[in-house]
Length: 456
Image (cartoon, rainbow, N blue to C red; front, side):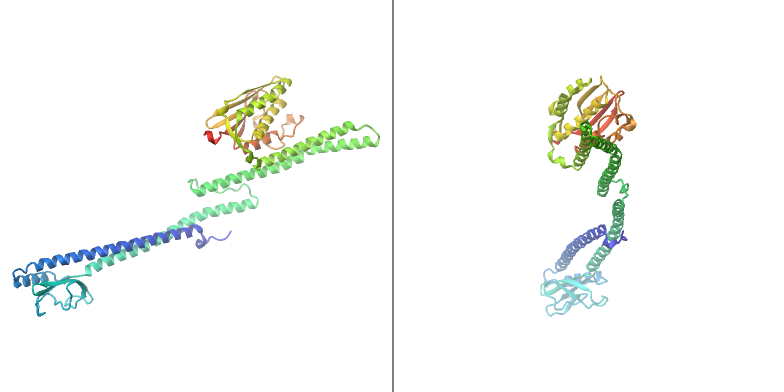
């Protein structure tokens, strides 16, 4: 495993990308707000200047210049720090009143920097000039408060940007580290599995997020893989043990036949017995191949919506006479066609129930009653094959589905030990479940199928 590098971490890069976009959006929105605020402050300042100008100019009525001069001087004295300055000049440009002399300012609004005693250099003023009679009146307000407010806003946005960037990067690093640890756990598990540790599993947090969901799915796949590998190991072991006997028996038969041929004796019976042994061995391998094909899912392409009750009724009709000839009884109870629709392969399902019925016929004594039933349970359809025979010990319920596994009592009867393995493979292919239930006396095999989607 490579050492964790934050800069190479995909979660951290995504966090940085999100942080960049968030900060960019914050800066753009801040710039828009600043421009709107600055424009609004300028409008308000102009409005205040024009209102003050109108109030001062209104005192000049009927050519009463003294009232105008008095008003200008009184307003000038109110602004001790020169935030508001006033200038009244006569027609000849002489200073008549105010706390500064306006020179060269155009009518209307204008900006200027005035060298006024007591005012820091560089202070900018917003002025409005106009004629009052033959005189010129100028009212100017300092922009220092507006500029100070704008500076405060800019500083606030600047600090806000720095704080948000820091929090975004720090939070992204923390989140990326947490996610990366979980990704490293997944990678470590995959490495362990690749090295043969099939029992390794991805640790789950349990919060149900997307990583937990994917991890759970991977764990399920690993569980399936482990089961398949264990099954392959078991099959290899069972083949070595269970097929060794028929192969040795076939070899002995052929040896005896060879000796009889050398001495001129009749060997037709030996050859027939050898042929039967060979056929049994071939059937075993054919069954193994069939199970492998089913587990590979190749038959899913043949799935259609079908009536499970019809399949079960067909099996009951085929084996009813066989059961009667064997001193047993076979009956079936099914649902109406419209209530037992599932999605599956009719041929494989027929094989499934045929295997279950044949097992019951083979291992139950005379007088046994075998029952087939199809019932509805919530959104599943249950197919049940039960009998009142000797049953199977509870500790053997899981083992009988293993390939080539046979109970001690059945080793002397014909068979390969693959019937229930084939049943399990078909059940798994259909997304169903199978369970054994002790009927006391007897055994019930219950297969639970999901109903066809069109009916759920």
